[in-house]
Length: 244
Image (cartoon, rainbow, N blue to C red; front, side):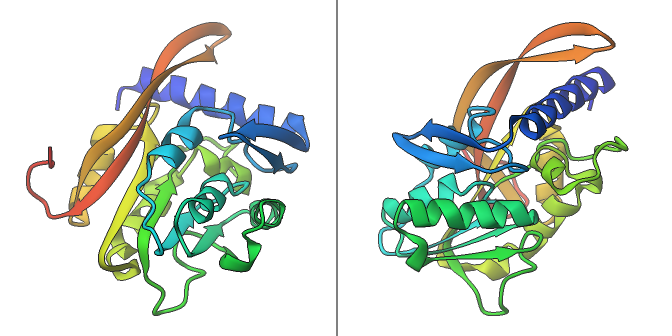
């Protein structure tokens, strides 16, 4: 990945995280509903990715849903309001776990949602499998920034690609027969590297939704305006050409 592009991505990520830290508790409106965003949890209105992915996912009627990195809970709650019977959400941030539970209660789906604390698939039981698995993953795969040290920073940064590697290596064991998997990402990160990493673990990627949005970064004291592609990928088993 080009070092200049990486620097811009890191600057945007740090700015977004600083804004989340400064905002405190918020009430936001998204997808026609009001959501509580508690202190220490990344806001789903910080970029278009939450709305893009949440509206594009094919929720299985009567099926089960797993969301990795639920944040304040918008997507997993939406899934339960749009066809899924049961859902599990995991998040590495204790504040996000509590926030997801709060919004599930607010929208009346808490009796069908199990929220667990931990990284990627770690909180799941051995036999847990789902009809739909989704993660709106951090796009900055290889951050080495010393500021990336708290749990909230996982919204943007995945140092050493540890999270994505765990997701891609453990995904097959978490899908039901015929189950589907989706990954949110953006081109602030290394999309070519993502495809290569997916191929290493036996997965191909296909873009199923995309939205381009302007973002501003400050690099070495200079403001830079960039357009960011927010992407939703579906994952398919295999190492051949990417599916059309």
